[in-house]
Image (cartoon, rainbow, N blue to C red):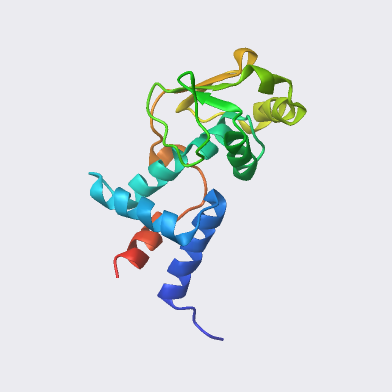
Amino acid sequence: MRKVSDYAIQLREKQKVRRIYGMLEGQFRKYFEIAERIKGVTGENLLMLLESRLDNVIYRLGYANSRNQGRQLVRHNHIEVNGRKVNIPSFRVSVNDVITLKEKSRKVGAINESLEAVVRRGVPSWLELDKDNYKGTVKALPSRQEITMPIQEQLIVELYSK
């Protein structure tokens, strides 16, 4: 039986995270470089940056059933941040940003089905959802403890640190 190398394990972890967030290598590397420059633990900074992307926030708020669907909602001009149209999925939300669904989009069946399903999935504690008004608020940036996905970010840091 062959032993899997550390490099292969690190590479697999990076690919898993890239697949979760729907990113290409170049974009992922830029997020890593930004995470390195921010004070604090690089791996935790990376996850915080990825979680604060608009397409992910749309998914976490329950407007979409997946990050891909969240990306499509952003791209198709269904979303406003602080009253302004935003159609860039990688837009980074900040604390106190208000994410709303445009008036015309509130009748879309897929969005309403997703909002019904969010009750079972739950909204993270760093976000607040006002389901009746189709409005979400970023209360804080996510910490590592609030990101419950099985990600070993230290493997990604080791991979890029070589």
